[in-house]
Amino acid sequence: MRTASPPVIEWLTTEQAEFYDSVCRFARTLPDDVRERERAEQFSRDSWDRCAAFGILGMPVPEELGGGGQDVVSTMLGLEALGYGYRDNGLVFSINAHMWTSEIPIWTFGSTEQKARWLPGLCAGSTIGCHTITEPEAGSDAFAMRSTATRVEGGYVINGRKTFITNAPVANLFIVFAREGEGVGPFGISAFLVEGASPGLSVGKPLEKLGLRTSPMAEVFLDDLFVSDAVSAGRAVRSSTRRCDGSGRASWPARSDSCAEPWKPASATRGSADSSANRSPSSNPWPIRSPT
Ligand SMILES: Cc1cc2nc3c(=O)[nH]c(=O)nc-3n(C[C@H](O)[C@H](O)[C@H](O)COP(=O)(O)OP(=O)(O)OC[C@H]3O[C@@H](n4cnc5c(N)ncnc54)[C@H](O)[C@@H]3O)c2cc1C
Image (cartoon, rainbow, N blue to C red):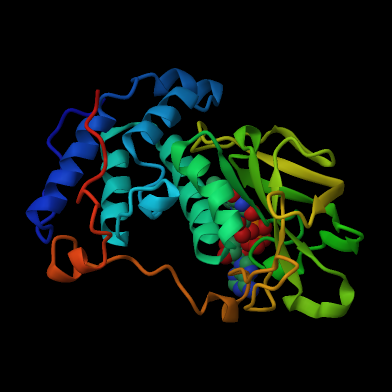
């Protein structure tokens, strides 16, 4: 446990500084067992759940979808304070992967049904998300991916192999990227929301790492994985269009022109007049609960 005073960040408003301190204080209440778990490469579900209950996991997501409705600066302060107060950097990394690569893409680019289905659980921590894009031969050059999504009656069949997937060993939501056939070129990559227990999706043994050892990582195998078109199940979100049509497709930030709508924080500076104008009237400025 770190007991030194948190750093002073000069440009923070009083409210932001209090928030930072409150997350730091919370972080110091988390079990101090990281030394053993680091050796054993053990993820702490207990600390994950405590962070969720405190409101960390859902910080940037709107309150009506189960989140805290925080702006981007506050979210980053919260994550920094968590990292400052808690030694388990692997858990903080897993939380970041969950937040930035599962919650925010679904919130920003998902359909209304997808948001309603997935975001409350992701914010509450009962659903753990992972972003499944890297392949053994496609890392920096993600568009070289070979995983395929073939259109069949009622959905898609996905085949491929993914690697270095953070949270895969503990996840129950996989955002799977695959190419929809050769004809559509480098921009024909779609993202599919897949439940962890789906037949055809399997997770390899956890990969051993030199650092961040408490953040679980594994390969993911996609063998004739069927993804239904059904509204509440996994649905295709295709990167090459910016529309959401009757078949449930929506845009996805997998290529640059699909990123034209970045996440817009409620405000850049918390506590300003603009900030309150952008928040829902009922919202508590800091809807994160005190440590119990
Ligand atoms: C801790 C960790 C967590 C991760 N979590 C996830 C995850 O949750 N989901 C997921 O899908 N992936 C994940 N990844 C994979 C990550 O996205 C890839 O490692 C990354 O895209 C780089 O790919 P690569 O490892 O194959 O390296 P390469 O692409 O092979 O790159 C190797 C080196 O070559 C350099 N390089 C590559 N191309 C060029 C170029 N054109 N010009 C100059 N230099 C170049 C790179 O900068 C790098 O230094 C994770 C990786 C790590 C380390």
